[in-house]
Amino acid sequence: MATNENLPPNVIKQLAKELKNLDETPPEGIKVGVNDDNFSVIYADIEGPAGTPYENGVFRMKLILSHDFPQSPPKGYFLTKIFHPNIATNGEICVNALKKDWNPSLGLRHVLIVIRCLLIEPFPESALNEQAGKMLLENYDEYARHARLYTGIHALKPKPKLKTGAISESTTVLNVDQTNTSAKCVDQKNAVSGAAAQQPLPSPLAPKPENGQDHPAAMPSSAETGVSGSTAAPGTLKKEAGLNKVPADKKKIDARKKSLKRL
Image (cartoon, rainbow, N blue to C red):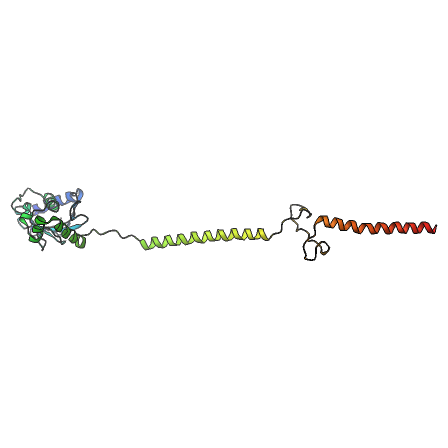
């Protein structure tokens, strides 16, 4: 156990027990810390109560125990700058629990709770900061504005740092990948549509596939195409075939007549 020349062993033992209790079941808005090698200085972080000009602030303070503690009260100081009637510019705290109302039976828990209550209900009649006390009595809105200003500058709660850069970067990469994927899908769709447009439709005259294999459709010959190279219609081809067949039959008839005459 830690020892201290300024405090008797029985006081150190009692303090150790009380500090352990404060650590296990801390009062609302109060967190206590101590140096194991020096129990004569007690540190505490006090959260600004909601609905006050000190809201969202964290104020560090310390209690200094004298060599005759607990017969005499500890002295309290705010280490964080604060605009408050009962707290001097050097951080000294003026509260009755640390002065005329002190009782050796009062513990550290009671003292810390009373100090936090000062942030909820100041006592401008016994002000150590005369400017804050006068302003509180004459113009509360102006007093609250000053107190909030001090809180925002000196006691603002540290916020956890988020890795916004990495998130933004990951989001950007994700968006780029999705854009590239969409572009690839569009390109593939266009390629399929283009290939379908370029491939000629199967002709009804083309031979059917054998053994499941497709054969390219036969290209029309030059005799079947017109001057412009376009394919002739089936009806036109039949008419031309009929005209060619008539002169051939006539020649055969003439040849037979000549043979009969010779006989």
